[in-house]
Amino acid sequence: MARTPARLGVGEGGAGVAQLEALMNGIAGDLTKSARVLELSAAEAAAADTDAVHAAIVDDGTEQTITTGITNPPYPRNITATAGGTAGDIAAIQVTITGTNVDDEVITETLPAFTENNAGTVSGSKAFKTVTEITVPAHDGNGATTAIGFGDLIGLDHALAANTVLFANHDGTRESTFPTVATDAANVESNTVDLDTALDGSAVQIAYLGITSADPRTHLASTE
Image (tube, rainbow, N blue to C red; front, side, top):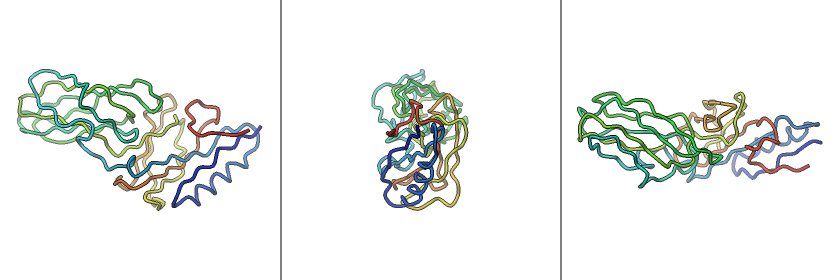
């Protein structure tokens, strides 16, 4: 029996999405691909922020494990670490992030190493819904700091075997340059979309094809 994805309201730019849903609704038999629309509100699509998850952590000469003072990203997003303070005290350390993905499963990621004696930001590739623990190894001196934030990668709520993203809207306008998409059929947190336009607090819609309407990662209602 054919299954039809529930209709979503997408605001501005919704005409193209409605056409897509209408096309997919015409597929007969067991639905092995279905239209999905991921919508981020203005707050969820906030601009990348280098210290939004945790303010700068001052080096104390030891490895620090932080579990308090943490603010979760506004939507599943990739995590960043920024080295600052006294440049000569910055070491090529790697920060480790523990938290959960969109399905509330525990995930961990070790971020790329900082460049020794240089302030700068490194970015992870997994989408974290929550951050529960931050592990920061010791730098070379107490003048170094490490701040934790989130980047521009948006986490999809479905694990994709291939890139099936169709288009993205930013602030009600279709992106003319196709977004950069990462997929992983086994790990939902590694499925991300990076719009050509930097996120800036404007609403975003991403249309893509899922794998099966019966997949437990599907977050859309369906009707027989």
